[in-house]
Length: 178
Image (cartoon, rainbow, N blue to C red):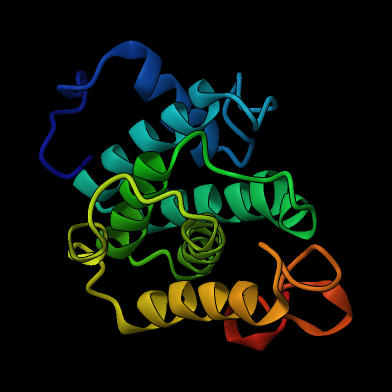
């Protein structure tokens, strides 16, 4: 991003709000207005940052966004049966983002959440259409494991109400929460 500019000005196509968020993340802080993790706006800000980070090859920015989304937005809620993406279509959109940007930990949580919602019958389209965009075998496996856990337990989220992992917690990426 910085190698193709002169010393006085940097030309970018993104708007000021998005670039300010990217710069905040580059400095090591979570983006402003992302503390209400249940809001669509929070996830929307992260999506914009990830797109810019990918465009300009900013791997550290992508890693930080993934870390914050997992730790602040998902990890705590996955133990609760009340966590869901705003809707299943948005969950599939985030799963596609995780695949595109190689966000494995976030992808696991998104896939597990989608699996639990799909086990409850939240299919926005026919099954083959829903899963068509899932190209990562690990994410597809996680979706299917979450569905299987819900089916085997006789309830939407298992006997303890929270997933398939030991002690009532989901196993997490690599079979253990980091």
